[in-house]
Image (tube, rainbow, N blue to C red; front, side, top):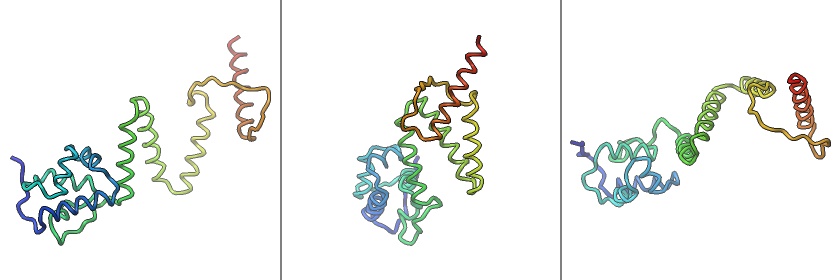
Length: 183
């Protein structure tokens, strides 16, 4: 049996207004909150309008999590609203999940790897970040760490910046070296 909320010093409509105001503050749709909670958008709408008399505690907790508020704040006047997670971090998490859900499997795997990389990168101070950039740049110069892509090189370097021209020249040298080794 699911536990219902028994003691609230707010009316159903006041609870609903708190849910709706917070949802709009975060610029979330009914559908988005419903998807996060795992219920239909119409159910969220009924909560917002104060039409659900027997509120289930797990649903209230899920709604609170979906709109990044303290669950007690939804049902008690004197409770604090804030959670441990800052709004910008929360919105970033939601947006990350939205993007992930629209990607194909291969892209999701790549997205996950990039996300892990960013998490590690964000833990570094400025000096560490500069060093990480240098090391990743070095890895891109080693053929076993880069994707095998076919390169087309022109005999001219119209409008190329010096870095790209240098990279193209090095790539051409590498290709010719590989061709010599194969003979």
